Length: 408
Image (cartoon, rainbow, N blue to C red):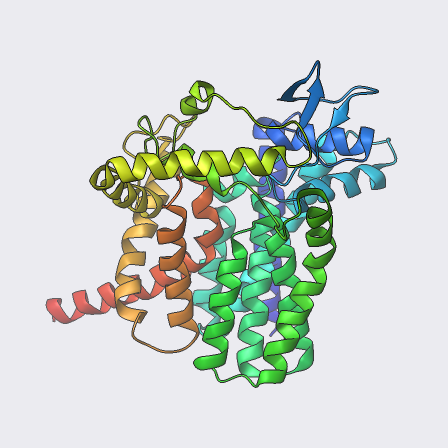
């Protein structure tokens, strides 16, 4: 026990030190992209929104005194609330972006420990430690914790979700059901599409693991309690019970005449938008984007079906036409290709075995198929990194044993 405690403590310490070192070379120096706009507008006006109305023109921007900010549901809100909370706790004495990155480093270390706890459910001590090292020092995982991006917080919550999912299959307690629901609710506020994965996960719990209906309902109830304030806010502003309204944007970015696996945004500058400038602006605009995307797909279904399978390949393996900065860095593509190759063998091995490993396999496959409906960015694969590492271990063990048989 002491040896195990020493080993995991060493992994977490090394995880922290490595990120702290890279912090001085690769970390963001400012809050980036839409997060900057959302945080600024929320802080200055009290409205969570990207777009402002100026001279009867709607455009994204940092609101000034007297300018009207339109409420937004384009981005999921949890990461903005996270930044907002850290800003309050900083008391103006610490540079905000540095404090955000530091807290993400701490979250990344906690994620490492949770991942280890998950592994101990089906692997021995040595294998668990080795895979925890792989997870902690996976280059993209290190880099992500140093960027003002929601992925580190999302990964932290996702690992908690898997942790309590496994706990509930082992012990059907109200506590485990409650915690699974709470974490699921937070994940839905982090990524709107997680609602789909949560429904599928609950169906698996109910029909495969046979959890009783009380635990099933408690899990659902607590997830609804978490998301209900934001659902109410959106209903008041948009007359719809929605968490995120960006389906049309994502579908059109990933499915237009210029789209590659990582999508293309040039199409948006060519569209003529005649949308009433009120609170429903984003909702109506997204519906228009969805209609345009469906037109593209209907006009040439074979083209977009082929693109869909290219995106699946990109998600699992590699994008041969990426324009993403530093995408082809050897520290990114080599670990990804090796891990993905072993993962495929793990998927083939575990897909028919009912239980946690089959659930993780199905989650990985569903993620690959779902995200590929839209477009694929490098950071998307991080959310399934813990699952990939587990599946790849079984794939590696299978190939190793087969090789031993052939040699003997």
